[in-house]
Every structure is written in C-alpha cells, then in structure tokens.
Image (cartoon, rainbow, N blue to C red; front, side):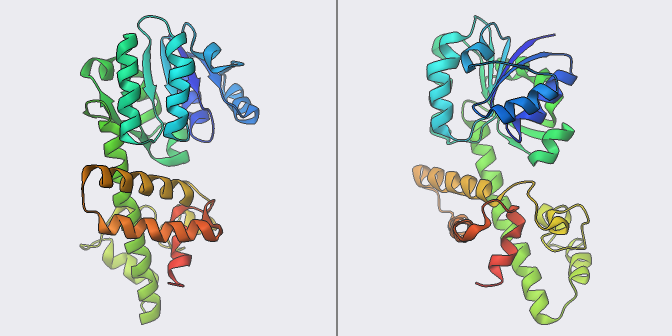
Length: 293
C-alpha cells in the first residue's frame, strides 16, 4: 500500500484516483474545485486542503492539470518543495514538450524520478481503467511508476526520455483530429451522393478507409451504437480538448521545423467549430460544422 498525492481530480482525474483507491492505495486528493474534489472523496480519497498537503509524505505524486502553465506553477511552487526523498512524480496532463522537459529537469535537481505520462481513452477509459499511458522519462522511473499506471490503464508504453510521452500524445491526437475530419467528410459526401450511411460503414470498415474514428467512434448515428453520435454528441472527448491538442501539435511543429499542412487545416476547422459554440460538444460533432463548409 502506497501513499499517493493526486492533484487535479476533475472529469479525468477523479476516476483515475478512484482506481488507485480500488487498488488498495491511500489517495490524498486536491483540486481547486471543491465539487470535483468531493467526487474523489466519494470514491474513497482523502481530501487535502492544499496541493502541498496532498503531496507531503507521498510515495507517488500524480498530477492531471489543464495546461503547461499550471503544471510548471504547481511543480515549482508546491510539489517539488514539499515532496520527500524518493517520491515518484507522474504528470498525466497533456502539455507542450518544452514545459515537460523543464519540469523533468527541476525534478532531477531535486532527485525525484519523474514521468510525463499523458493519456488517451477519454472519460470512459478513465472510469473503466483502460487508459493508454504514453510515458517519457528514465527506464528506472518508468519501472517504479508502472504498477500504479497499470491500475489506471490497459496499455502503458515507455515512449522514451523526458518529453517523449507528450510528443507521442500530440502526434497521436493530430492523427486522430485529421482522421475524424476525413471520416466526417466522407459521410457528408455519401449523404450528398445518396449512399446510405450504413452501407458506407459496412464497406469502409472492411476496406482501406478503416480507422478508429470510423469503427469505434463513428460520427453519425447508427453504425456504432456506443459512439457519442448516438447520444447527441455528449462528449467523451470535447472539441475544445481536441483543439488544445491540435494547437500543441502546431506549436511543436513550428518549433521542430516540421511540415504538417493537414494538422494546420484540422486546427483551423476545430477553431471555427469551438468559436461557434461547439467547445463542449464531443469532437466527432465537428461533422455538423463541416456540412456548412
């Protein structure tokens, strides 16, 4: 049994913390939102009044925060000054690679093993404990963190050194955003051509157009009963979150000098969708906006 400090127990963090509790660990949770923190408490976590309190004496620290600025501030001002010797740090936020590497360097100065370990799988995966973790950091840190990540996820991959987890996440989600737009465009074209949606699904799902956005997350009602399209696009992964990841990908592409024209176009389309009120809708709901392009 380990003592775990968990900072950021919102829609993703709360069920992740709950799975750590189910695994037999003692979780001290902190979130600026008391409503969010209360959900973690319902799952068996102990509430901390501050981030410092949550991580003091913790064996493991897990953070799930909105952006790089939050991660930098929390680690610089609260986590690193408060942790004890040997604490293992796991940041599950999706942030820019540069910030991840900066925090890794600070952790190394403190003598604390650290992973940047962003996730894929959405809220449903967080509840089910089937998330995918993409981990950046040393082999030793990965091995120390692995038993705890296994309680929250189904697939845990060591992507490489510091920042590699973030690099993998933004590359993956850039592909996802582009692929979703391509599937949406195909169904919109099929509608115009008089091709039944189910027929397109039956063919493309067994042909070269097959992809996760089609077979698991189909953006039209009917073919995949569990997709958000069958629940009025209630989000598993919001359009606003997709836009955040696409912007991170474009920032990284600019910094690295990589050409990503389709990624850039996907960012433009999701920006328009979010600015027109679609931010809280599932990212597959972009099909509605594409009909008007």
